[in-house]
Length: 194
Length: 129
Image 1 (tube, rainbow over the protein chains, first blue to last red):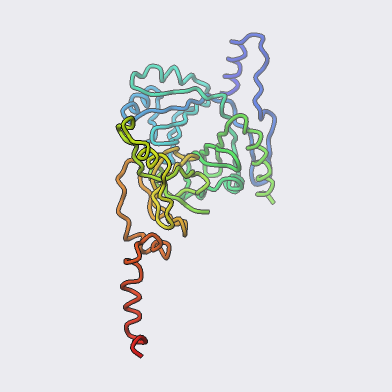
Image 2: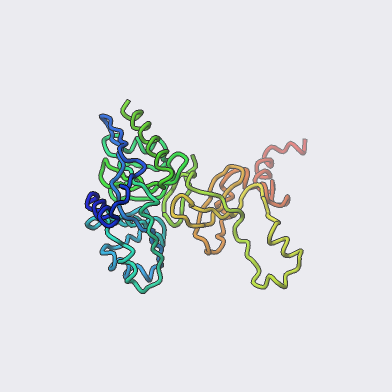
């Protein structure tokens, strides 16, 4: 999916330079956990009142979650509840979600933040321990089940955390913080494996 | 680490996600142009800063981003309760009474040491000896 998106970018841009993500080529793998940059994806920051939610859900093709710390997923898209009127929607296939939202007449705000965020995938038996090295959230399955998502802190920075599977998390951080987040996670992974 | 209940996230969250945002329930005058300087000073600068129970605004800035109100004990740092912004100030005098010595700090002297100490002293009858 990501390669298709990259090819599309390359063919559209002609002879421009290949886009390089800040974490490209970096990975940390131990016996217990692996920390890898997530493939490129499109993301929007969506703000809308209750009355606009049904129309936006229809336009985006998935029901926006309305309960705290939850997410909804359909196909390549995931919508994360961040606040009572705020969602982060990630499309791993690179579809243009702004075009989908533009069809909605109800009052809302959709901002493309695809390049503001960098995703990091932390997976393995010690994934929760690795993230807990810098994140004060309770990441037990009872408190943070599969599909749970929240904005929280990680060390000195703010992240958005999503549990995609029992032993897999997606960490979304701002691009300029991605080096800090990745290095922190890599060192935590080393500690968690010890 | 303190756990603070966010009324929007409906659960206890670590204190690192929160920021204090000053005293709560300070209403800005709807007709601020005709307000006297003294009244404006009271609204703008003067805060109660009590020792003991205080109503404060807090913001779940690294979570849902929402402002909410909390009743907190400034001595013990105990959060008595939290509630959504815009909701009326709840009566928590009972809850506050149970929260330890700090709850007594802001009471007028005539309310302090009246009933309980008297009941305790009565049987000893030391004063008559």
